[in-house]
Amino acid sequence: MVGPFYYIRSALNPDLVLTLGDDTRSVVASWINLFGYPQVADLYQQWSVIGSDPNWTIINRGTGLALSVRSHGQGAQLYVTDTGDPWNLSSGGIANGSTALRPSWDFDLNASVYGGSMENKTQVVLWSWGGSNTDKIWNLQDVNTVKPFPTNMVGLSGSPHSALLTSVFETVTFDGAYPGEFTDTPYLWRATCWSTGMSFQFAANGQFLAYAADNAAVDSETFVMGIRALWTLAPQQLTGDVRPFVAMRPYLNSDMNLTTSQGGEANSTVNVDAWNDDTTQMWLMYLPDANGKWNPWGGC
Image (tube, rainbow, N blue to C red; front, side, top):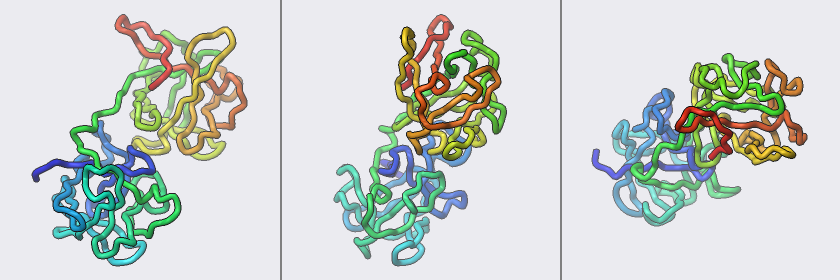
């Protein structure tokens, strides 16, 4: 198949892209795959766009099948077929920025991430314009201009006791180790800088630090990068301490903060809670320098 090829990125989050479901026929929105995560083949997230307005054909690179709808009318599911359906780009062309994707036979309907959900494998359906509309806006970006996101191996340390964050499958806890001992695998996290936040993948087992729900314990049950594994960092300061402390907040709920129980003592559990301006909600990330010395790092 001849390119160019595009990621079709959602306005809900630029790292949420149009892709194929597990059956390689249904069309869903899932996290962009630039590192070979096992949940999806990268070529299923890439599309060729051929033709001109109002009759574009949108072809999936992984299957060679074209974007279609199962029926006419609101709520119709998108999938791929041999022939496909013609599509209109509301922007008027590929290079014209954000666009709605509309079936050429009904400009009142739009390809929409169902319910505005940012969860992986959310069905993409036809829906009328209305509401915030970010679920119906897309950006076509040439795959050659999308580079792998920066990733570093880091240690995560909490304040005030400097114990290290570690993980044993479904439980995230502090351990009794201290900075300087990050070379031990149980204390290393693969930190990736995404478009709108960071993720932390536990090096020992490949699972992600993930947000469960309001006031629920944080866990690392998932091996799949998704919106629940996305965190934002807010700089914090401790009196008399110049190190770059941060609050770690779930992207889905900025009112919650990664928090240690039991005053941050070793082996205490970790959950999320509302901000209370306490040192149990302040964190340090450590990166190694060229000489192997671990130094505080403020993040992306």
